[in-house]
Image (cartoon, rainbow, N blue to C red; front, side):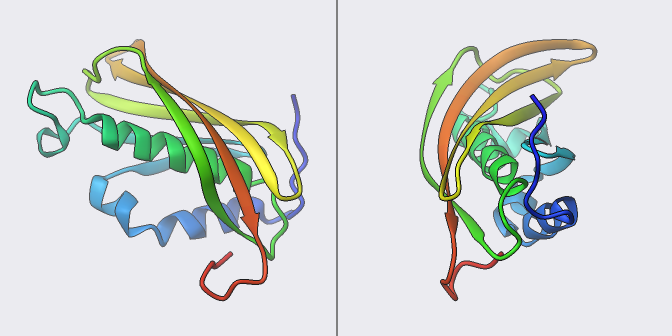
Length: 150
């Protein structure tokens, strides 16, 4: 389903906002594909981001999927608003074991204030992908607040 962004410069705005997220830089999460209503984020396997069994920590997976959903929603929002997550639910489907991990987010319904998004997270080993998480989020457009940048 094709989505129409409210801002013709949505991609630059999304990438600029993502670049300001220090948490993403700390975790080594990078932004890949950005199209209207869809965003992909990726992180390589890093031993310092694992839990006690050597799997990438679920908190890292959730953080990446949440941000991917937020930016997918942000890509369709007006140029003068900021974006914040209202809630999300994650299902962990398999241990996060792989060379890299990709969160592919898409907007299910874009509203003026609230958008509902979903992200599928896969572990990638060579050419094989394994579904490891599914996240659904509600994302809010924030206008008129000095502490929420657009």
